[in-house]
Image (tube, rainbow, N blue to C red; front, side):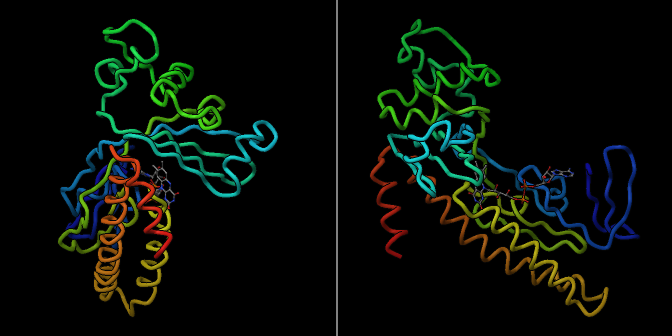
Length: 272
Ligand SMILES: Cc1cc2nc3c(=O)[nH]c(=O)nc-3n(C[C@H](O)[C@H](O)[C@H](O)COP(=O)(O)OP(=O)(O)OC[C@H]3O[C@@H](n4cnc5c(N)ncnc54)[C@H](O)[C@@H]3O)c2cc1C
């Protein structure tokens, strides 16, 4: 699907990449951060938060890296420093996701010395305009180790043993993103409210999918479809707006020049 055109005589027109096109009564944009449906209802586009995450994976952690497995425990662990954080999350089947997060310009990897001061720290030639090939696993690993230089060995083992590095600059939509209702088109999930990844986005997307399905199923007839979608949108906007504010403030504090902000945030969340 490449484009959605509302308001045609036969309904909402959807154009597909292979040249086909078709009209529908209702088009639901559940197509993520870079939604192709969103332009049909809103001119908002995601912007960079100033924080990048590089994701790594560890498999069979309890067998292959038992010390790392013990460090993470049954849930997740996080370590916070100045403008950077290392977070490890246990998934099922001994799989662990590691997120190295840091404040950096979007193009940080194009010049490690200028943007990150990394070549000097890594002990290579100072002042060289050296870029990082994000597809080069060992180069990414050694740049991350340089970025987290001085951190405790057991924590750095998360990066030393990590595989499958994925570069994820964190983008968000404006907080409390809404739009003037457009008959026959709606959005849900990241397409509607992309926010910092602090454990909410997937849950909201699933809940909204279920709520929209219930609203549509409960509509007495085709003429009531639009009202059902409007009601769904109002409910989604109110809840997602609250979470967008919480997660935006959370990211500011979790990847912060003052790491005590991260600890204070955890204290606040746990006491509530
Ligand atoms: C590093 C990281 C960690 C996260 N951790 C958590 C967490 O612990 N808990 C949590 O709740 N959330 C977490 N999230 C957020 C969560 O991943 C998202 O909020 C969630 O995936 C949004 O779901 P969605 O269905 O809206 O979009 P997506 O998961 O992005 O799904 C959109 C789908 O649409 C498809 N698509 C896109 N364009 C088109 C097109 N033109 N035609 C057809 N299909 C298309 C895509 O291929 C994709 O399958 C995290 C995010 C990141 C980046």
